[in-house]
Length: 391
Length: 164
Image (tube, rainbow over all chains, first blue to last red):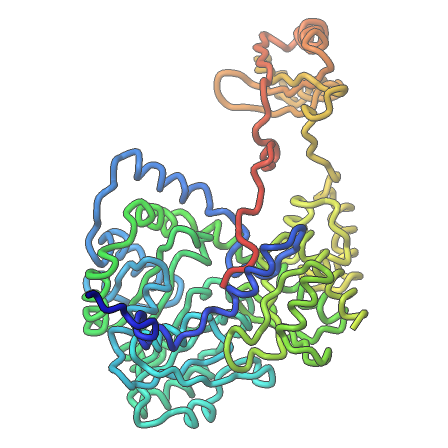
């Protein structure tokens, strides 16, 4: 007689601990409706530049359909190293300090799995990308949420960090420019954070996928701060800057010992990133930067437009220095962010993402992606304004 | 010309119907400053006009014929090609005219209601100009891209409504 597996133990305890993404729930509601103006999309509205798509087609035509090196094609890793040096003054050795991953998401996953032992605490600066805390849990660690607020422009303050550190703290996850707040941190602010990180011997996972989309001043990477390179893992990829979200192509850089540990996981789980996407990425780095410049210029103009328009309709919004999200406060309406987003969707057919899904500190705000046409932005602002007047 | 001027020019080139108020927000200037810049650019003839790109094939009653004509000419002493170029571009049928390097000298873009009308223009008006040595006419069969705008309905947003 075969004993039935008990329902409670069919799936792992770690997975059972994780809640489904709040975005998923809202997505289901939004997709059940027609004629929606969506400010809920966390990806570029540009199609991947043709020169990059053409390189992928060419790769297929030439028959490059087999595996590449686990860490990614050497030519691509050299291209990434050159790109990081030129754009952000970061120096990484393509032989042992770079892995090409299946999206930045895989990079975050293998970075956490490479450094976390059961029970280790990882500080997650929130509001932030929805995957961080669940991936910490899945790696056996414990996510410790630190809520940034609009009063500090959603930047992590040294005091907040010190208060969150315990003897079990192993790492801290930073993401600037930030999804969903659009907030950025300056070199001076990061220097204060770096001092504490070093004092407590922590590792930094710095997700810099939106680095190109920095509108006011230059992007600051914590790895540029003295002695931080040896304890920083930088996550990035092609999705946002090159409008290549569907290609699933990211990369990770860091000190050789950590990268070597990550490569073990990557080679057994993913083997390598898709070959034709890697060929496209080589082309992107060589000939795609002018397209990046144009797209970033366009995002900046739309950022200016939406922030000013929100202010005009009485929706307080801090000025996001990067990414392509505005994160206005809806606290004055007395509604929760979920209720606000739901009512706005039902009554005016504008899809935004309630701030609470991005973790603590997000409640009282909504994420509005401005990676959409000016016509859509205009119409969305009109509808949100009308909705606010009715409240 | 400063950065803001160029930013405004790019935005207007992409969408001539954008309002000054919208433009001002996008380039982070006041409405008055933006209006002044546009006025100055118009006065300096940097902005020469505001055009609309129309797919006339979708308006059956107003279908037109476009031809590109390679023209070889004898340049005149003192005025080079400018004199003959001016004689040609003054014809209302001429939509564009370029001096070219290579096998021929002038490239003339002609638009007419019918193929006959274009043919008559070439034989009666263009070829009879003294300096014109020869013409080669190419009729445009289909417009895929014009002034940076692609023709067709390929700009649908494929993204799902909510993504992380």
